[in-house]
Image: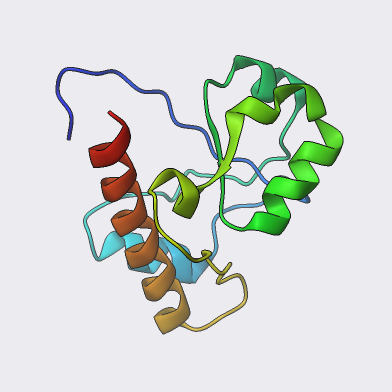
Length: 120
């Protein structure tokens, strides 16, 4: 929504392999008119970490795992809630119900909006 800034956003996981997006994830994003049908999961790599200006994780444990593997980029790693200057963690809805995916989507949207307001 910030028309004066350009961002490149990538998604990667700590234990991901190349798989298509889940049906529930696609469905809840379709509700917002966002097509993610061509999205595939991918494993985070050293190259991604080095190219990133900021690495946001859903949970503190994810941040700690990244720090253990990539301690030299500790200044880039933060939880999404921490970046948004709030408390909490985003629970992974993988394998959950449509409502779990909706809740995750809504939580991500709120945290991203708040983080952008506080940091950009």
